[in-house]
Length: 96
Length: 436
Image (cartoon, rainbow over all chains, first blue to last red; front, side):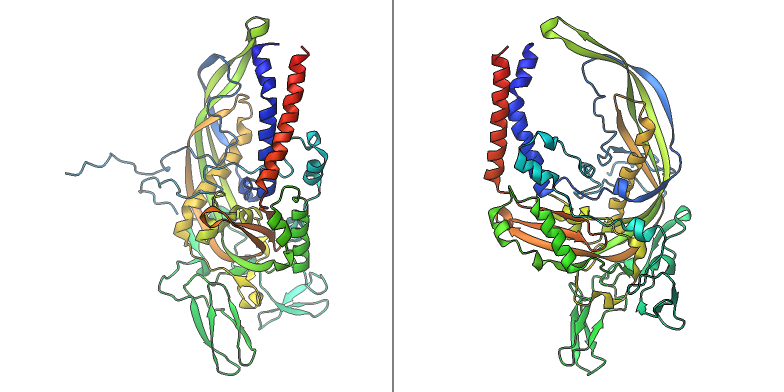
């Protein structure tokens, strides 16, 4: 067996113990629960539109997923686009 | 809602759902398969949850209110009064659904600007929460503290009256959703909920557990309809090749992928999104309180809410609203963005290595705000500790019966169980390594 495999097997005990602790803690305290408004609110959506454009390649990576994958983290906020039609204008002049 | 020429708003400054926080797991989802766990733990995990009534199926789909006496739906408005009459059994009672009364159930697609109902208007800081009434029966002066109560009984003649006029202190909402779940039912659900969380529960909690002390309370919410558009931009990757390199003992897996610039746009309407309109209840910091428990029992069948009448609150306490529409707008925008991100998820399934959204934008075309009191059965337990300890809630939705709670844990017991299982697993790991 490779060194990686042995190490993973040795981590089985601490990982299993920690995993069980957190699972039971959450089961009792329910700290991870909240109103799932994304799924439980009545939403009437029009068909999604958009564009997909190939811009490059990421070859020879060891990561299974794209860095910073947040497709399922609906509540993680990212940079806000300026509002449509907003008059952003030039930046304000520095005060004297 | 939008200020076309204004700068983009500041990011919302609060904690809780809608802010950087985990999306809650789906019902029944568990990170560890219960079948692999020791018997007593597995039994607790697999015990049935209190059943929540699906009111959307029972009451919302047919859009009918049933006669509380005979269940018939042949109900008519009695001309000249505010009373409804059942044409089958002649039973009479109050209650006009605000959905039809004020047209809250329609016109989502044509919403423009910010429409605020009279009960949801801004709170006037000068208005006292103490209100004095002259008893209409005996003339005595009776005071109602609208912070916690909306009705009072005259201490001289026992005449009951309530606050029905919409005063500008936020105490009188537009609508109220009456309790459906009875106290005995709520007690039974709380008992069942705690019953499957006893093994590692705090000893003092178990000893003092008296679900009969559950109290009925009307909590203040803003029910929001909205018409919005969400735009998101980011990068997605599609795997083109997977291969391994290295010798037998040092094999490593590598991936090749195409990178795409991904943009999505979705227009949608939101119907009856509930937002806590009490500052303290809206703070969902799970390190400091257990308000997330009360947040979890949302949503309610708000379609069946009736026009405000203080008679619904006789014998039930209530909490006053202390947040205005403007203060809740950042929270609404935050949740609308989350809903938008959820809506576009299916359209990026082809990116099997995931998508990293880098920018998101929101345009709110119109919103409609209605203030409402929603019914909750609340059981609480105060766990002593640092910084005043922690108040643990077990809450039952007064309409659907959905039950959620926070049961304090006996830390040493939980740690002992985790260490025991960890040691057992480590023993197996060492045995496997030793036998190779």
